[in-house]
Amino acid sequence: MNMHIEPASQKLPITILTGFLGSGKTTLLNYILTERHGHRIAVIENEFGEVDVDSDLVLASDEEIFQMQNGCICCFVDVRNDLIDVMKKLLSHKDKFDHIIVETSGLADPTPVATAFFVDRSVADEVELDAIVTLVDAMHIDQHLYDPVLDGSDNQAVNQIVAADRIIVNKIDLAGEEALGSLEASLRKLNQTAPILRSSYGVVDLTNILGVNGFRPSYVRERAEILDIDMDNDHDAHGHHHHECHDSACDHPDHGHEHHHDHGHAPALRPHSHDATVKSHSFVYPHSFDGEKLATFLKDYLDERGDDIFRTKGIVSVANDERFFVLQAVHKLVDFRPDHSWGEDTRKSKFVFIGRNLDRDGIDRNLRACLAA
Ligand SMILES: Nc1nc2c(ncn2[C@@H]2O[C@H](COP(=O)(O)OP(=O)(O)OP(=O)(O)O)[C@@H](O)[C@H]2O)c(=O)[nH]1
Image (cartoon, rainbow, N blue to C red; front, side):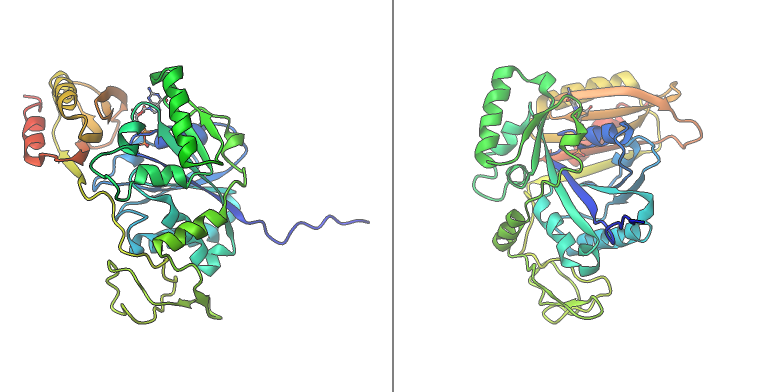
């Protein structure tokens, strides 16, 4: 009798989902998690901002969702090490899923995230990058691609497009055909090879983005050289590897010596930082708000300041309403609406504002003025 022999083990595909703040990553993720596509998916999320709002916004599902919140995944060695640790945990029960999606923060450069998987041998042996999928906000991307404040310095919105294996132009409902055409032409200049798809609310044919085997390792190798990431660490028999750390942000006591970590050390990066002018401010109140006052304040404030304020999110308790309200704003576009009931959960309100020249005290004062009497 002929026996069909399965390959010893198939590598677990990883999709890196990236895109600037507010481009629609969580929306696409929710679409993926609720679609029947035959993949069993584990999700790793990395958020920019001290207060976690995103996990409240991801729909409950059977999938496993891991939050990583102690810093940006592309900037900090510790966070990349955490990513490797989470990955190892996932790999220890990999019978439960067959695909991993890593959602980066909206300000992350996906390249150091992608390289992190190659550096730890025990992880690298078991996973493969399927694709870097970059979402583009058809309405707002221009002001970030051509951001005059960055003028020549590292622009993460550009890096995200350059690194993409698939580009999804999202929010096509907010842009005309002509604008879409010229946007796609400028995206093509930044990335000559990635297929460009279009979507509204992340609704795309998932066979075009999951399981596509579209990753170009050569690209990451080239970029790694530019970023000065050491991808050729020697691994010893125990799976440890040794190299000198070039990362000025590395506070490991062995700095300058060889590293011996159980979980290996993430790629060494040259000092790397995001647009330092962009800051995140979080506000948490144990009180309920006057919904109308708050809606009016947000609309007026973002109307005035929305060029500098890239992203606003919140979960809000509104007086005399059983439901929690979700605040979602991208620049001046504000969406504030009721969601499901608080149920047993303790009511509280949290907000995250991300942008430039934020007046923390002023925002706090204005928000407090909208509290229910
Ligand atoms: N009109 C319109 N709005 C959209 C579309 N996709 C997403 N949005 C809205 O855009 C806002 C941001 O979407 P998210 O999915 O939270 O964006 P994100 O990339 O996860 O945001 P960050 O995690 O902050 O970077 C939300 O209010 C969404 O409802 C779309 O295709 N059209």
